[in-house]
Image (spheres, rainbow, N blue to C red):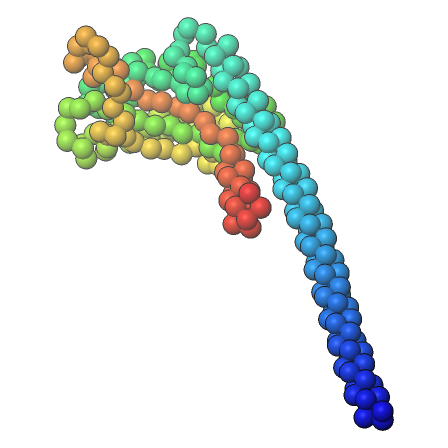
Length: 242
């Protein structure tokens, strides 16, 4: 009898130990579950905060892009209205001056009629870009760019086109009619010359002489301060927020 009771008590003791171990395991699993739940909740909150921050950044970027786009369109509209049909203005606001009007063939010195043409027209152009404080504060640069035709090798065309751009700039810098803008020229104007890389596409049935004439030109264009937006987007990409 005593032996049977001892065995029974021993069996019951094992069962009690087993259920205690199982209870501890369940408690541990519950704690782990709670910890994981809390972590996921915090992670979700972090993701939600990041999504909200990204949304705000995208809205800000969109607002800036819309601002610059609107300003760019306004400048182009004003330039086209100012010159009408007297000068060719493309959809980017670029003015095209025919080199034959400004220079003799193969030369970079301005002709008298070329000087008069620039004196008559270009103060109005600079007045739009540099006369309005809002526009002026958003202008990155004004480019005077010379072009040539395909007569002569690459380096000849490069030198001639650059010299022609320089002649135009030197004239407007020294002419009294541009004195209002002279102090700003060094901060905004840059010069470039193009050779073979600047040829226009030849039109169907266009003669070689007409095509060459169209290529002999000086273009004056502007660029807004888009670079700051590109830098902003780049930083966002580097941070992984976009």
